[in-house]
Length: 541
Image 1 (cartoon, one colour):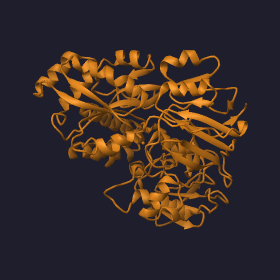
Image 2 (tube, helix red, strand yellow):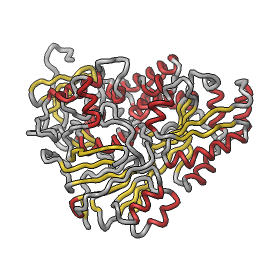
Image 3 (tube, helix red, strand yellow):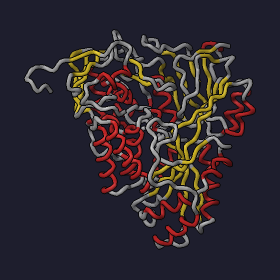
Image 4 (tube, helix red, strand yellow):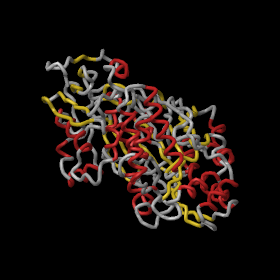
């Protein structure tokens, strides 16, 4: 608001310069910036449409384990699909992570005090069913996340946009955002909210149907999807935005079986595969392009921190200290990973080493268990059926035996883990993968995914109210801090809290390896996150 009684001056950021918002915003604004993505049932057997150059076929490393409503979609398959069928006002390129205008006609316009932003829609934009995208749809897409009908079950995306107070349609093509406080990465962060038709999501029944039959304004539309037959996508004939589809159709096969993905590529069934088995990297080089990229993607341990003995952080810390991470990475990942020394991977621009680092120290692990009064610890380790987790978990269990801890292994699809096992009071320990970097890579966003709100800290690892409040206060305070050094210091406190408590904490960060046939696919590159992305890709043979 203006302190002079006059309307605040507005200014428009120069065209095609979305990233400059973090610099151009008034000094009071701040420079800060979600399924966990995990696997599902064993495999699918979708078949390409045989149109050659008009189609792309691929095989993903996960199977469908959630719906597609972008307010809540968290599975690896759904989030990758959503990048192709939905748009935000601004989107992040899934490979370069650079922001670009999607539904927005121009860059968002900020008020002088950084508390209000105005965004206009590009001309004539339509959903894939031919209905127009209006400012009311945009306002609704944000409001349903910020102020859901049932506050007790907030959408997964809510924590990412908590700095927004309200969103209002000013006319048919203009939206106004009112912020709780200045937020310099406004333009990038609003990319997490994908725009949906209000008419098809306005009530619970409509939203439930939409979750399985989504309609967006992106370059592709989804024709079918199932755990058994994979995903079928086709060109959205109503799309007229900056990333038009360059093929008529796409077929996404899905399997958690690493050998099946390699066979699909080598047999010519597909042009690209996700999550190349580390032992197959050298064999694929030459004929195929192999992208190796350091990732945030982590293998983590999560505990029911409300249930003894895991309510004692010393027990959680002991199990981390008992893991020889270098040996695990060498054996299970063929060296394609790094031990976690912080919640953030060491390649992140905002990386800070945590005060508590879980180096391999079996004697310390034994001492912590003794201090906690927990002899002869025995429990069931639940894991998702992600291929990396399936390789890592048995090695970890063997290392735990060296400190007198016995764990049985229970590996099931991700949908069963989060839908059935984790919600029950009998749940104790989980090993899974998580990668909220599909939504963004700034510290604020990455930490809010696992440590803010209800879904993870409240419902899944049952963190204490005190710890949840402390973490929320640190992240919120950092979000409102304009001084970069002060903000980074607050983030360090948050990183240290996550490390010391270890209610959910990474064992290691992986490298992501993608392979594709350059003779058949152009304009494609692997991403440093889960999923495959074909925006701008085409068939060349």
